[in-house]
Image (cartoon, rainbow, N blue to C red; front, side, top):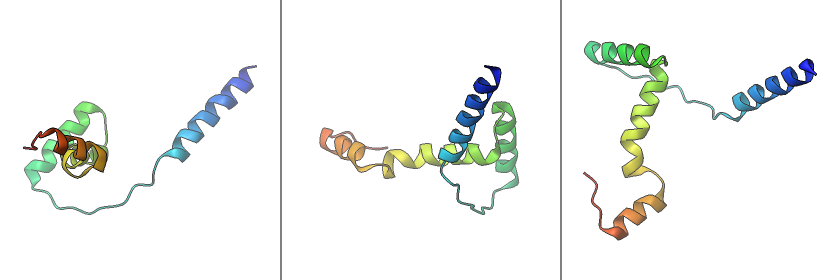
Amino acid sequence: MFASTRADAMQGIYTQVMDKPKLKPFLMRLHPATKELLDKAAADQHRSVSSLIDQCVREQLQPRYGELQPRLQRFLSGVRQP
């Protein structure tokens, strides 16, 4: 029974890894102070700098350039973006 449970767990991990979208490499230049802030934030959150940058960029761009339906709803409701 243990082997079956472990095999099922491993299959779940494999499925999660395989379902993740492929990431696109992207080279960027940062001010040294910005890089230090990113390093501190990543260490504090126990995350990679790459995942932190990805999250920040998505949070910044999604409201304005994200899917059409939420933007259309905001437009029709008269709510302006800052």
